[in-house]
Length: 623
Image (cartoon, rainbow, N blue to C red; front, side, top):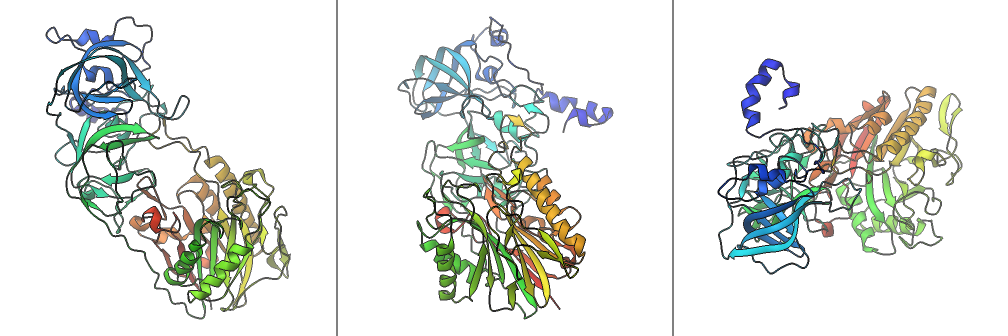
């Protein structure tokens, strides 16, 4: 809680509690000082500069740029560029870390357990992402001047994170900063995850009864929560943390392999022994670097299978990001996708695919067609026991739609040919001609089928263009718009220096959403009862400005039909997120009989999945 948010009387009652953590508004270090501030607090008996004084209750050291002398501690970990040093006699202030990294080149021979006295060194703030990046810094002492006083000492006791130790913030990452956390803002480790982990930088910590809420990534990282997730806000039924508005789950702890090998760990794994390691920071995240071998009971996430069995008057519609699908490099992926479609998705009538590459994959050639890949896919679907599918797509201009250079990813719509479903009659569009909404017999009709929405708009520069298709089913027109909006790759990290994290990619995504919204509005202006389905990888959350702009007052997001703890299609750094969605016009809302996310990929180890997205499926009933 914050004083500035409370009535005055209640705020006065909290002064004692907050004073224990020395909450301060941090300022940029005073570079004009000639005498280290730490000297003012040295005791007459030790004449040392304490590590906690160097760290300070803030993100950048109050002694940054200054020379410090007689810094004492025990070596707790060694890397290729230095070692971690921790004071075995901590002060009473939880806000100031007792650990620090000693940077040196070349690294002098020290061992874990050595008692070391740094004779002198310069306090530096190291940016692991390089100057100018939105990254917090690591407080270090740069030196080669130290003495080993003794060897084989016991290491400082690790700080327990969670029950029986320090409570981990579980909702707020940072809410007291509007700008650079390293320069300003209230430092509040009790509530803000950003400050909580900073107050432990370089220290030994311990996590008991850890639960894996992500699989081991290709970068050998895995995300855990303490105490079997007891303090986690929303865990899914399958044991992962679900992202919510205003709750980006600071209780997530990312463990990395600086000191040990991280094995293949699956979601749901329970760690039989406490995880002990050192808190560090890199790539926009605080990290726990285990120093002891991990022991755990392996998780066993299962691939879900839909139980849908459609009636004659029902239509199954699904969307699936297939992560750079192409036939050239990994042809075996087509067989896996066929199994996903036939077995796990129950052979939907309409299937919108995103990230289908051209036929030679990432080879940067003149090829932009995906016909060979799609022809092979529909063949293996039949071999897997599925129905006959046809496909609709428009080849993009070379390297004009974003994604991997040479890959030429695009939206594709597969549809079954055995269920009375057929595209409406209209010319096929091309890469640069915009589809229009015409009026024929008082009803809306697409000028091109399929057609691309506003392919020449600045909003879709270097990004996938929406694919619009008009189908006929049981005498009715159904408009399907498949989307793959601008990715979130440019956005700032949740634990970055700039708070709130800048959403640089959002501007383009909102522009794209507005164009699609206006296209749908043209259809509904002609027929207020028109049946419109807008689906795909929207690359943003249901509550985001982009998705809210897309929906407006004319589309309903079917994700809201699911319980909060089941709303996810994608897993990123331990956060389970909704990116893939199905929105429908209100005339179709009452036709929805069933909606689900089929969890077959997001929780799986990279080698066990086809894609990093889960497909989404809905069933509509027609008279």
